[in-house]
Amino acid sequence: MNRIFGAKKTVPKPTLDDAMSNLDTRISSLDVKLSKINSELSVYQQKLSRMNEGPGKQALKQKALKLLRQRKIIEAQKDSLHTQSWNMEQASMTTTNLRNVMTTVDAMKEANKELKKQYGKINVDKIESIQDEMEDLLDMSSELQETMARSYALPDDVSETELDAELEALGDEMAYDVEAEGVPSYMMEDGGGLPQFVDEPVQEDKEEIKEAA
Image (cartoon, rainbow, N blue to C red):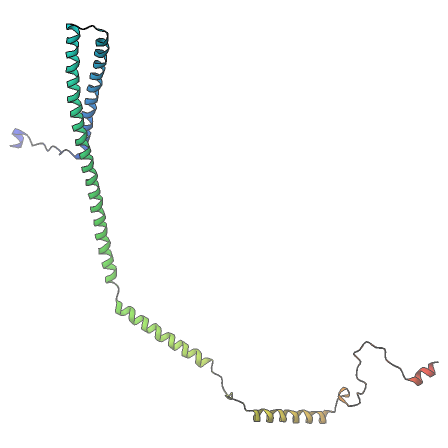
C-alpha cells in the first residue's frame, strides 16, 4: 500500500517559538499597511485643506474616512496579535522555568541516590568502635608516660632531725680533711700574710726604712 499511495509524511508539530515568529511576521506586515495608510491620509489632509467646499471635497473626505476605518481595523488586529504574542512569551517563559525546575529536580534525585550509596558504605557501629579503641590507646599511652617518669629510691619527705644529722656529718668530714691535709695559710687566725685586694701601698717595716736611709 505504501508503494502505491506513498508513505505518509510525518509533519513536525509547530513549536511555541515557531508560533511566536509567525506572529512577529504578521505584526510587521500590519505595520507596513499602517504606514501606507498614514501616508495616504496625510496626502488627503493636505488636499482637503486647499479645497473649497463642494462635491469634490466631499468625495475626497469619503475616501479619507474609508482609509481611517481600515486603519482602525488594522490597529485592532495588531493589538490582538500583540496580546497573543505576549501570552505566548509568558507561556514560553513558564515552559522554560518548568524545564529548569525539572532539571533541578532530576539533579537532586541523582544527588540523593549518590548520598545514599555513600552513607550505605559507612558503618556507624564500626566508627564508634574505632573511637573507643583510640580512647583506650590514649589512656594506655598516658599510663606509660607516668610509669616512665617514676622516680626511684627517693624519700617522700625529709625531717629537720635528719637534716641536722646530715649537716653535722658533713661538718665532721670537713674537720677530718683539714686535720689530715693541714690548714691553708689563708685560713689561719693570724692572717699569715693574707693577700691584699685593696689598692693601697704595702707598708714596709720601720727598721728597713732606717737602714735604707
